[in-house]
Image 1: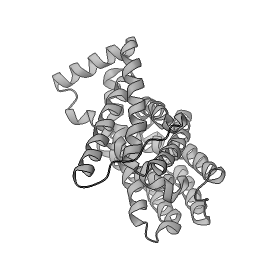
Image 2: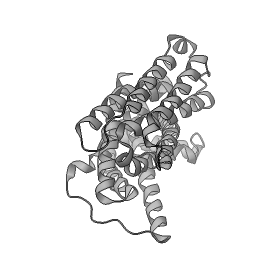
Image 3: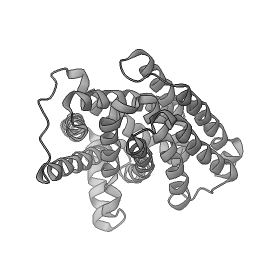
Length: 296
């Protein structure tokens, strides 16, 4: 649970960095492709040097050939690409706090369904109440963003659902690899490829190429932070499930998001956002009720 909270803080910081980079470049997809590529290059350079990394890659390859892993088990990076693209596109307009609450709402519903059909965890009254409360939090926190920005609120909700699926897929691959690093590297490779395809398709259909990338190295740390987030998620989700991982990371996400919105340039947390945060914490308490843990 502590690891999930730390990952949540990392998600809030990653959202701010990708949002800032997207605003500077004027292109959320290009910005997140740049930061994701930084993380991928680091993983490609380091993972093959680790004994656990080399062994894990061999185990994943063997599992795919034997049919133990299906090809779609390796596509978690597509969901990750949707999430980081959502950061680059919408954080600048919505702020980190509204973006985070919207993601939490999507991941709560997605985690409930994924845990039931992939993880075998029951849909209890407490878990359902937690997911419903998170959806209510999205509606309340997004009150200040509905005017002309409905698509911007819908995007992080969809990204939240994608994150729940990504967490489950990465956990499956990590279990086979017996290490989080091969799963993380595959995830980044697929995410970078998905973003590159999306950018190419947009330019082919008449879109413009982005301008020059900013020179500040700190703006590209989102990809490095993402490595730690995915590695932690891969390890933790097998123990506590997708829903509880997603909601446990809420504490870190919301604390980091509200603080970042308060101390950095951009939208300030509104009364609606603070109310949405409070409802989300209620959802966390409901979904993490002791009776939920005993049923697993």
